[in-house]
Length: 117
Image 1 (cartoon, one colour):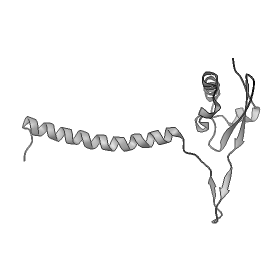
Image 2: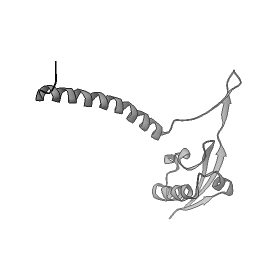
Image 3: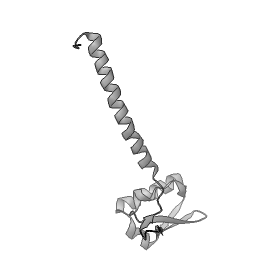
Image 4: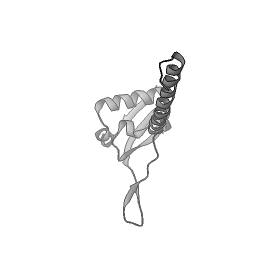
């Protein structure tokens, strides 16, 4: 049995109360802190910080670090979430699926004799 302790600073940064319960259930099922996508549970500018001791997991939140460019602009250090990569792949697949459906429709019209040349 895993005990999850969330600091008061961390509870303020969660998106909602439901996000806290979802986070706890995910941790209890998987027990692997590397599988958690922070943008799913907490605000955009924060990351989780975990401390594990025996059966206890202590959760805290820290602000994301930013690196400044020569142009004195701040850019976040962000690793793209796997969910976003999956969504982008699906969008590109949708375009190819539309093309394939159009070609199949044209072939069916030709085969049934309903098309005009």
